[in-house]
Image (cartoon, rainbow, N blue to C red; front, top):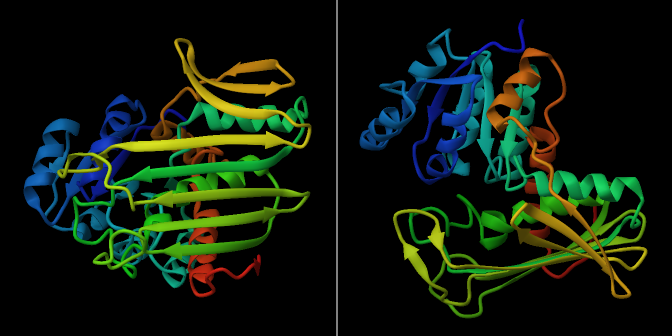
Length: 337
């Protein structure tokens, strides 16, 4: 099979995630949208006009079409497992977004279902040249190995759907958003987790059905750790309730075992990794990953090669969910991983 084969997409779920993902689909040279389905038909119609393709009568119609190569499951996490199982049974490759599922059981079931197809999960580091460049710099040993990863996120709690605040259907702020940074910390550390401790609090919004503030400390082999924190307690600006469009504050730095402090800066030439120690600095401009995540996913399928590093496989994505759901049952307890 040629690496230049154009694959046909069936998109299930035409909500906010597709809004962010649509530009990448339009830029792709190796995928073509064939069908779109959403229970709210007007949303599927809107994106069919933007991306091409036709509106399907049901998700099952997409699974039944032999011309569909890849199914994009851009639906809420609690709905994803049965759709993934049907897609895999029909021999369709799968692209979805984080978290892979809302529960550990569903996540593990999706791993089993996708054993004979490719299943890629898109996180914040998907398509991100900065993450890839930072990993390469750390792997080179030039500034030592990563010892500390620290990231804090502050933004308003989600208001644009009726499921994001449901502890069962989605989870609290960590599952909803900070799981991006858990996965990035794992990727940049490049070595196994050994233990983790989780904290969950409701500080300012007692009416919420989930916590508004959560954090995790993750320990890694070789004396590494990550401190990752998120809060919805502050009522920061909400620019629109039509989708994820809210004020976001991000505090991020890392430290290596040689004492280098690493930060990310936006420069005219692109996102840049800055390493500083004793008044000296080193810089690396992030390298582009080239083709879009969709094109690189297709290339991995057509060449029967491993998924690109930035497209997380189902197993790693399931590990993120299983870890969080395990720790939620033992708040404040250091649990061996």
